[in-house]
Length: 337
Length: 251
Image 1 (spheres, rainbow over the protein chains, first blue to last red):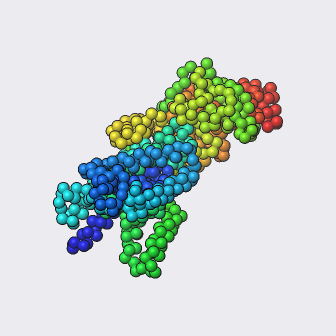
Image 2: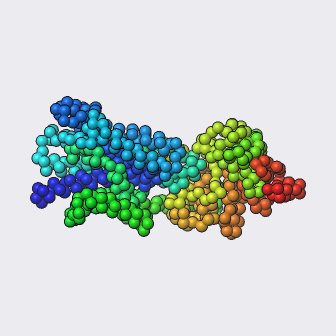
């Protein structure tokens, strides 16, 4: 494989890994728990910004060409870990909105507004995170320590992303395949009935906001460290819809479906369309991409609502069935009065 | 001491009193019927006891403790479990999963516990599965264990809901018209289930408007009309006293 091809491949793999992480986080919130977080990309962004400013050092080092707050030069993997934690904290904070017992469609609207406001906020204040230009020269983690050739470093980064994916997989798999995951699905199916069974839906919402937010922030931090730049144009609210489409196409509620969706929608689809001949201007092409993404989500919801890899139907190992004829008493606590 | 004591309970919606000073008691271990015409306030009373509807006046005591200001979740944790007039199964969960959501205090339902993996919560899960299977087999639904609850018939959904409530070991089971919209064969099945539960000492409050059903099943009956309790006692007794007939006529 020639060098250019290797660079292209490693870039695609990192891009895939980052999207897989994001899709797992979103799937936990939307696919499993039924929480509609249209501000999802904001969590990716805060992870990216936090990781960036905590590894870039003070902004005075750049001769005044970019301005940002909280500049610090922390050793790897601290910026990434703190970025993840900040994402989880933001999840707790925004999750509180959902505690006001908003109807889920209103909650979705609120989150969309949060996303738009966040972009406006960062774009208008240049002293905060360098405004619309965004941050550049974000150090690649461990690059100077390792001293590898660029292509070897790219492969190292693929490994770093793969390890992150493996760790996150353990987290999401354990949550979704446990009684906790079952309880989340119950909340998704009928919140009122879940409350009547004594389930703490408020705590569940906060938990999926925090865990999903943390995973999204990690994915953003990894992406920023790889690209070396991060600007508001990269986390417009429409990015959230690409991820939603990925979850819908892959299969809502399924972790494997999220991987398939991440591969098909943001990677193959968005990346693949680059190779198509340009019709009109490049802006027309970019606009068409969003339209097609929207149509893709609609088509799947209409014709294939369970997606390519549907949520697994749980089955429990057949145990001893109670023998017929000798009915055991109903397993109940009797009332003692 | 009665298990549940309701005194002067009130709830109005926009100035209209749905429940207007209802007082009654439910004895532990008994199957109590709550009857009355449409609009008598029966379902609101169930909501008020379960905590999904907040009282605008009066008090509710459970096992002698006031619970009027407790949340629905807290009341459920005290052992008050309800079913709904409209099916409220978890449609895209299997029947088994529906039942397994029932039990309280599951170590795997704590986020950290879930992350620790199956060795942490598996033992209790297995016990719950055994318990769920014994309920399924008693209710004649063992074959439906892996079916999605949303794909069941109306009557089966009702049974799933009752079983799910039973999985939580309720101290007081509130059944809001469990036979509504269920075909007659299934109604007999549900009746026999309720009879069995009553024999085993499960305390139940059954909202129903079929008087014959109530007469067959219930130990005691509370008659409501226009938000108030108009009579209590045994069904046969009430019939002879004419209050029930009156309540249905004025309602």
